[in-house]
Every structure is written in C-alpha cells, then in structure tokens.
Image (cartoon, rainbow, N blue to C red; front, side, top):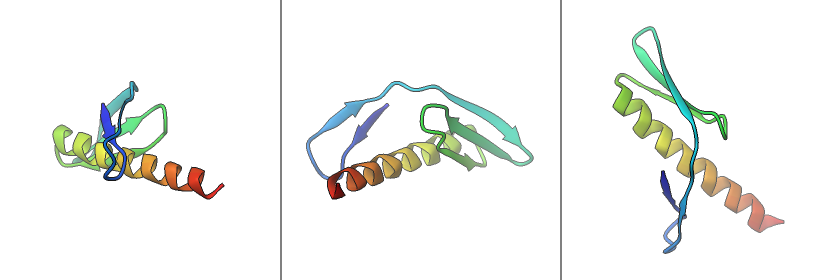
Length: 68
C-alpha cells in the first residue's frame, strides 16, 4: 500500500496485514500493524475506508513527531 504524506512528493511503501470479516450487514477491515479499523457495506468499501483511515493515522503521527 502506498501512502502519500500531505501534499509532499513523498511516498512510503508500507507492507501490512489486514483481515476483513463480516459483522451483520457490514464488512470490517482491520490493519494488524496499526490496529486501525474501518467498515463498509462491501469489502471494497471497507478497504477504501481503511486506506483513508490509515492515511489519516499516518498524517497524525507525522504531526505529533513534528511537535516534539
């Protein structure tokens, strides 16, 4: 998975393991490296939502790192 940091020309390839399981009417995708999780009504939507969540997670980590 490639993540883009803010609007910089920086890309980081990150290998991770995700699982997707069904809970009722929703699919839940969990990244086991960061424990970020998201859901969707389809597997594809759950993966898209997880990707978005991982980008936000990474952005927040960079923001915290810059504050130190």
